[in-house]
Image 1 (cartoon, rainbow, N blue to C red):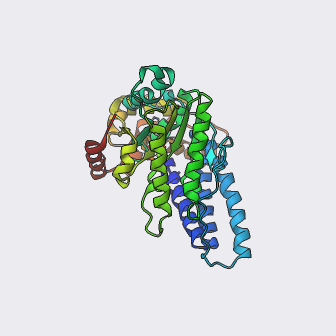
Image 2: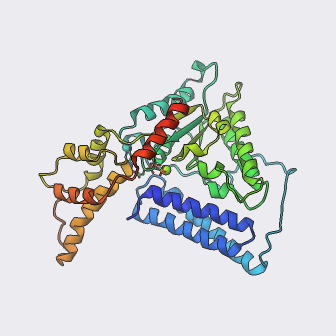
Image 3: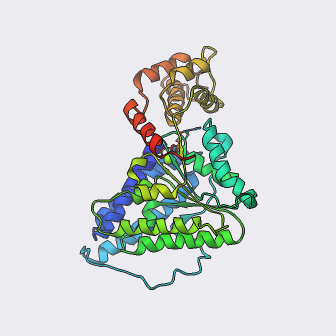
Length: 383
Ligand SMILES: Nc1ncnc2c1ncn2[C@@H]1O[C@H](COP(=O)(O)OP(=O)(O)OP(=O)(O)O)[C@@H](O)[C@H]1O
Ligand SMILES: [Mg+2]
């Protein structure tokens, strides 16, 4: 089984490639890429139904499927030419009462309690969002609206941002990078406008609104093939960030962005996120807590020593640890089937099951990469 962060990253990559292909007028390639993205997302919702974003991804799959149908129509009707350019500058962006179609509003099911460790990150998020929402009068000088979560893959950034939805009584908007970018020059920019208009209007009703942009580097990273589109999306985004940050603004619109490639972001962008929170590898206590959480529903042999196991898992991410427990359990299930006892119960997992898996599996983040995060933290962290 492949890990969630890998599947998410792949889905995002193919979805963005589909946008690029559509821009070139290559509908066939767009369809192939989008179908790939659908495959990866499907693997997440099928194998990880409890993943906090699973139901959001189900909606996303439905959207991508509709898009594929649309592309198939186009591929049949128009010979690929790629010479259409559409610029719309006049149109008003509407009242913003309806959520734009590229925004997914479902609340994720995860809470802060489901997340092991990361106490500092949780505290920083609470202070940044929950305090100003409860007592705006205590913040006469304003408060930050942009929060950037960064750190190695599989450390809980997506979980953390998703859990915010349940910490506040408000709206949680999940934004998909591929859906916001568009083949039309100017359209991506307009989408950004629509998003923030909608968020501001909602916030005027008195409830906080959190916009979550996962793997934000995909949205704002420099795409070599493009002339102008991405730059304009980015500039519009920066303008909107300034807008919600405006000293006079008392509205509760927050933007949480997550990335495992913070060095892809440029300084003007980074500056808009006044809170920059490092989500590190789990400490020993946190690894121990994760082991407890992941093995809660499983049977363990009496020789399994979670303290020692936590020690041995130094350097592994939360996502690695979840996978390792899953693999260990699978060993016992496989045995059951191999013995032909399909109706029986799997035997308890033993310490040597874990040891065997650890022999074959290295941590997914290596030392050098870790150093890069630490260096970035020294330059840019702001809690
Ligand atoms: N602190 C944690 N507590 C509990 N589970 C965790 C934690 N960190 C990671 N996990 C496990 O790892 C999986 C992946 O975590 P998550 O998607 O939040 O990683 P990420 O930091 O967003 O990674 P990426 O940068 O690649 O997107 C989770 O679904 C969960 O099973
Ligand atoms: Mg993530």
